[in-house]
Amino acid sequence: MALIHGQDTLPKLFRHVVRERADRVAMREKDLGIWRAITWGEYGVRARHTGLGLVALGLRPGDVVSIIAENRPEWLYTDMGTLAVAGVTNGIYTTDAPRQVEYIVNDSGSRFFFAENEEQLDKILEVRARCPQLVKIVVYDMDGLHGFRDEQVMPFEALLGLGARHEGEHPGAWDALVELPKPDDLAILVYTSGTTGPPKGAMLSHRNILFQLGYADFLAEPREGDQQLSFLPLSHVAERTFSVFYPLRTGATVNFAESIDTVPDNIREVAPAVFFAVPRI
Image 1 (cartoon, rainbow, N blue to C red):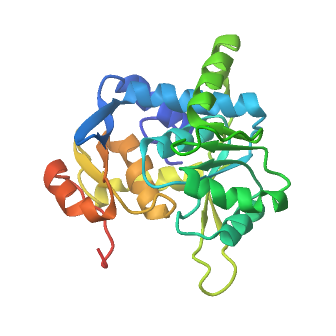
Image 2 (image 1 turned 135 degrees about the horizontal axis):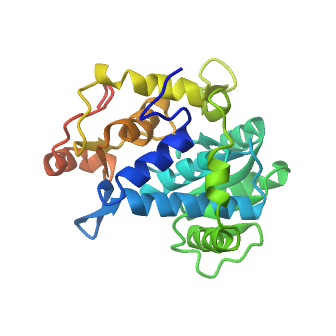
């Protein structure tokens, strides 16, 4: 069995890493031209409150949570927060049309949906009447939505607040939930491109992902504090592994590119020790 830092599932590994590296930098994003650091401790709190907020909304072990957003810290909070409360995460490409979003949400049985902004929210609102299992839609960026009211939609900040209150009312709930997933339980869904037929959701377990991390040395010698640049879609399994899971093994810092157009400038600023890209880039 693959064990990373002595842990056999992603939630246990995440909890261990957050405790061990609490004051070290986990990720950085550009804010008004300045790189803003987020520590592992801050990452852990936000992921924990995300997961517990979902539990307060009715998430059950094995429930699927879909995310449609560009690469940003909230993507990771949702990913690890969901996994840590025994949920399953699924990424959707931001370029997908409403009909594609509808298909993936229904095929995966997603009960919770995270949208980056108004543009992505509009896609799920257009098709939600045909997604009967959908419980709640959470929006990261509420710009342009300040007057918007919908019982099924809530801001991400409100979810964090709900999770914090749930933690206060149920001390110990987080650690109990982290222990629930088993190595062979489903962790993530990754949908194929659908070029030869309807997209299919590849099912990856905690064991599958930890096995990959066990061979991370073939990519590069793991060194804590190394810089990485994240810019390929997190809905793709390669970028997901590189930017979300690989740092759990190595302690690397993930830097989120401002956009695909700024990648050359961001590379010069970040000076990544390891850089993951595709031939077209």
